[in-house]
Image 1 (cartoon, rainbow, N blue to C red):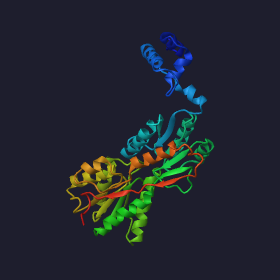
Image 2 (image 1 turned 30 degrees about the horizontal axis):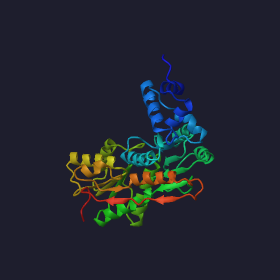
Image 3 (image 1 turned 90 degrees about the vertical axis):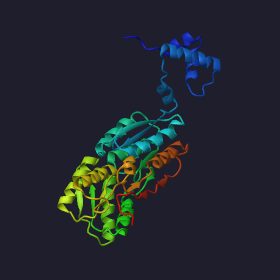
Image 4 (image 1 turned 120 degrees about the vertical axis):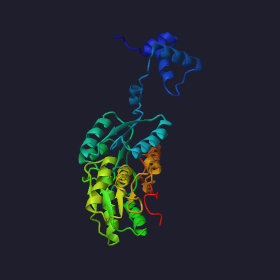
Length: 336
């Protein structure tokens, strides 16, 4: 196997010192434009890639931010990470991404692995963590930002919203249209704590109005898919055919519910109103369009990036930035 080129090889080919190569490879290094061009040409010819890790570690910097999300197959989390990455990338920082699978034990293992790589900050999805995970992050002495939630005992900065409160606006919307027999479709575990909060918010909103909240369809562990949303609607039509409206834990499951209604000849919204959560692209292009909640994931990512890029972020008081979700009314619920 051939030996990879070294900085000495580049220096020899460019006719400069190793120190000049090192400076030329660093952003803002103090070398002439002519020397930088010669070093760049030699590096390209040799196939040399500068290893910034050792240099950054000497400066107590690694150049990356650790981010955990429950799943990579979710447009909301992708939008958040995209906004975060763009803002950080403009400042020379990169995202190292890991998926927890909606499992706090997996999150603990993942955070341990990420911390060994010395990230400059950690961005977490949600505010529920194991005790050991919390302890590791507390001892890491780096900024920690929890997103998509408003935890009672935050680890550091928070950028999020109350998932439970979003169901108040959805139930208010449906009941204002005269719909009172409302079902909720979600998971039947608490692994997705944000989904569990939406269910809790649904129950509370119905109770405040003196309405029965016993039309609950649990469809297994998260994430709840289109297929599971369709199966849930099929069950509901058989077991509780007088149901007037269904709130699904996500737009994907709501799209599945819409499809099941179409197959069964159930008119939406005349016979059954359907609502989701997330404001995914599919919500705006399906027929009918979907009533949903927009949690502004890009705003969450951008706000988290601003906290990370604040140079005094470890010294300033922990910030709690609340993003206000918005009800998006589509054709899947009655116009009035």
